[in-house]
Image 1: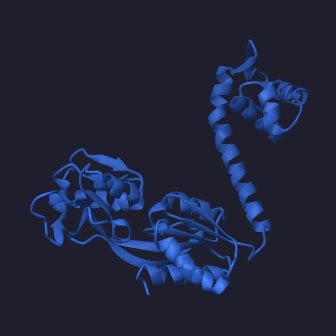
Image 2: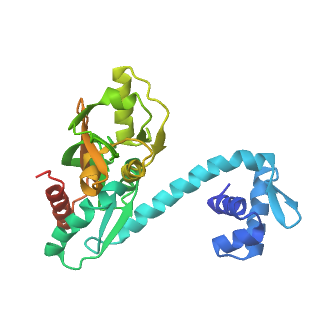
Image 3: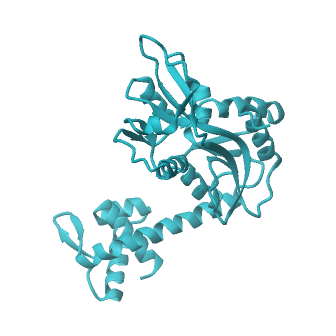
Length: 295
């Protein structure tokens, strides 16, 4: 199959008909039909059967589709890199950052950044740490701010700040829990709100309870530290989050305890390996280091 045939096949799978595929590809319907016929002729079998006004994939078409999806994803990656390389340096600062750090640390850092770079255009995307690493490898950003160390061969990183995991819980009526610290084992033995294990900090926490030989009780699993804290504020139980999120957003209704043993949390800045870093990137990292206490 030629690339044109693959694009037509994918568009039909997405749109469900030749006319829908034509609209997706910005070509005429006869062009789509002709490309499909050529593809099926080369393959020696049908990819679709016509049922009323729709094209339904055959068994062969269904088996082929997952491979086509992967190829189209890789093709899109090539297009993104090509677009990034052609966009020129210095036109804008593209920041990829985890959601919880975008709530307060990012605007505080940008206020400092603006003192040097005035009205320089800034594009901000909030993604999870693993997604940021993949996007930075594709050069979709100038700097990525993540939790933990990604160990990606196409990236280099530098430490911005080091915090720790903390336990936050809703303030209850009656005698307040005035302890500054709480044992991790104590938190793990009751239902609690935690970050998904696919997140770097979620994986760190999972490693901790494995080392302690404790199987955590069923609670609530969320994808971001900010959501975990909101759920704790709403009384759904204690949450284990990073200290940066807790320091930025915890109000009077939340109690914050340091965990024992202490579990460090690193904030790191990612950049593509072998790419000369613009001065704006270095200034932004310095500003973020200043507001997060990582001087």
